[in-house]
Image (cartoon, rainbow, N blue to C red; front, top):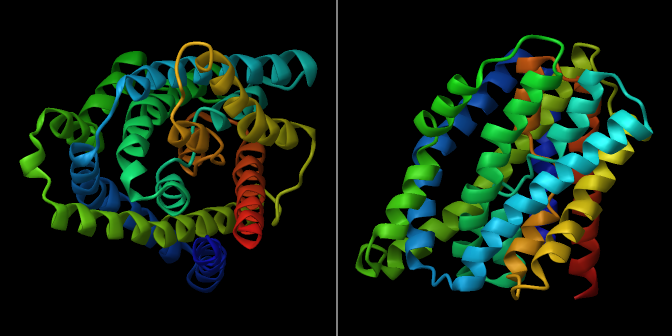
Length: 306
């Protein structure tokens, strides 16, 4: 785990430095890199790992419980933001969206591989595609349209975007239908190296995004940890996995992979939703930064203990 923690810290710092040194060019390069990963790197990695996986009934039912837990977490976030903290709509929406978009890909895949072994990546892919994917492309975009300060796109456009701009989804479907012979061990091994290699790019993008917001005066650096940010972080790191465990445990033996991914910090894609719909950028950036920092610290502590 220590190499993963070191890679996260170094990549994020490199992103911050690059943004200060090269300004808009660094952020643009990071976004192009993420698009390259989305369209050309993740689909084959997802296909080979999921096709190679042996998913049992618990894994299949766990996806349903994962979606249920995601909805319950969003409701809890609304209650905390609107009723307890009495935030404005855009701020409440930021708290909700931050809990609908976990970093289950760029961070989750390498962490699962390091803690549970590469054989668990198939379950990780299933959870990421079938739970985290709809959480972003349907849930978070719907929250943005409902709570954002600017008018959002309609349900039809968001649904078309989900099915039309989601190559990992089709890679996952193909993997579920494909025979094992289409996922030879050598290609599975190569794809697992790729899964670990995408982590630095993801956190380089985190660094550039946070530095961009700081340069524009939208957020401080580091972002402040006030009540709304702390609430978003606590909901994501504590309440979300607790709800998943609570709803699933009476019925199935929940895969450790799913519970681990549920503890992942807020994902960078929350910033995309916040920008597009006018959610509170300060809360969004703060939730990403602090939940990531806490997760990295926890991973480092676990690595030192073991």
